[in-house]
Image 1 (cartoon, rainbow, N blue to C red):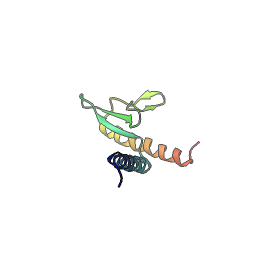
Image 2 (tube, helix red, strand yellow):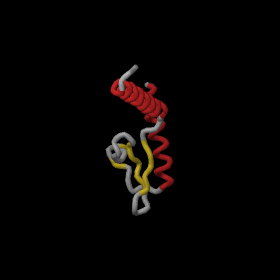
Image 3 (cartoon, rainbow, N blue to C red):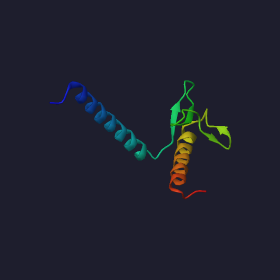
Image 4 (cartoon, one colour):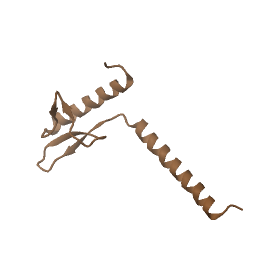
Length: 90
């Protein structure tokens, strides 16, 4: 019969493996790097989901945007990011 300690170790390892697999699956599924955030003043910021920092285009932070411009730009940035990951952009 397996002792309580060994059972706990096995359970902990399987929970850890399951969480790791789920995290890897989420990362591989995500094609986007950028998302929109509505600010308290009603404007929009495009931010990097990995760093939480505002995205930069030509060294300009993408903050204080109108929704129409922000929506188009976030799609373009995500498309460019996807192309870069696939190796089709230098």
